[in-house]
Length: 232
Image 1 (cartoon, helix red, strand yellow):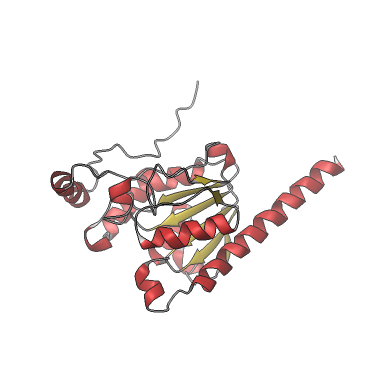
Image 2 (cartoon, rainbow, N blue to C red; image 1 turned 120 degrees about the horizontal axis):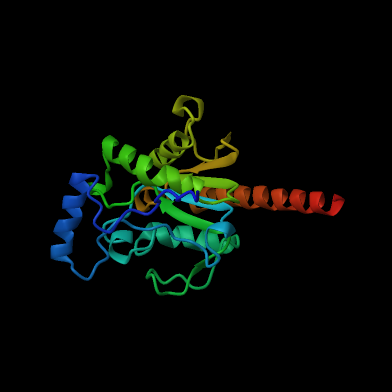
């Protein structure tokens, strides 16, 4: 009997969180040309099998991903994130803050812990839990070659830990941290929001250092796998 894979992408009119559903419905009336729906995972051209790194954000920005339909696209956070991904070879092409700019991910994928835009960029606990149970936890299981996860901010980090079956108290968030859980290396960073960079909580150098560590980790893992293959 063939096992049917769990749904990892919510339907465009997902009703599971009434507050978020109604908020998006209101924006569909105000801005009918916007995406205004749960934002899907951004994948590399090769699909799930090519993903070794998953970047986890909090939720779509109102005039960013909620408008464009692609994570971190259309607001300041995307400028810093995609510049950094291109710098370390996790993306290539030109980022022009629109989903048809031709930018492609390389060995990486991007998803939000909460797929729908929340009012004031603040999802409540029940919404985080619902999205984790129905979509985020299954997403973490869909990539057979996943090795590393970068969590952007406290909520994304805690939701990742819980989705992987860990205890938040045993895996606390800290910028620049690295922890092992469920066979994955979890790298944590402050969110690359304009607020965090304007206040100095996160500098570009601090953000770049996180992805430099990820690059080095994945390169070392690839070298180890290559050596084992040669030994055989």
